[in-house]
Image (cartoon, helix red, strand yellow):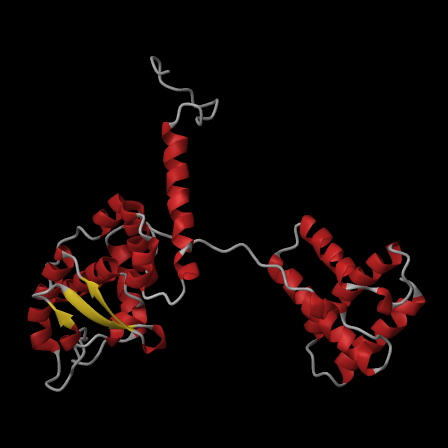
Length: 308
């Protein structure tokens, strides 16, 4: 690297090590990022950090992305560059900070995992033969029927559930209240649970779901029960509360196509949050297309004889 670039960089790294309180690994990561950027400047014929502009910085980030560097790493790189230029500005070694004009790249949004309708029916199809299993079944059915978050399920009180009307009152994020329907299978499971609950709950306990100690069930207890249930019944996938919420949302959208209605049902404040389920829906459609359309089949999986 050109000495005119290396000098200010060495000063910055020394400051981080001596007075910045940064861990050695952090300093090493900053060094790697800034040396790479300095090499890029060299290749551009620049001998001064002040010569870097926002467009050139975007070009460098794009080249790193093409090399397979993940978005999270690129965002970390950009943070290191911002810090470095703040150091240069304090020492009058630069007149601008190009990194403030560049937005960090967005990583690929991970789609939530879901169970298809058949696998969900299989998971919920095990008979509840003991009081302990009655509790599991009520939790599982309600999570899937009404797409509740774990925090919403645990916070439910007895008065929030109306078995006659098939509705449950839910307090969601931001203390936003919503009323959501409860399916017939879930209502049956909840009626069975209420019979068990009457013998478990402490006299002054208002919670809908309680443990055998008589107190409101905890978040971690629900998570552990679902995980154990999946292992015990051989479901073949790790069961967790959001799996049921995601599966319910995906199945409703596949059937209805009503994104606005799904937004209200899930308690999302913004439609953009709900739109992730359109990707799941398209993913389902693509899988069906690949299986069914004769022109979509791979060449090593020929269509059956007699097909067109």
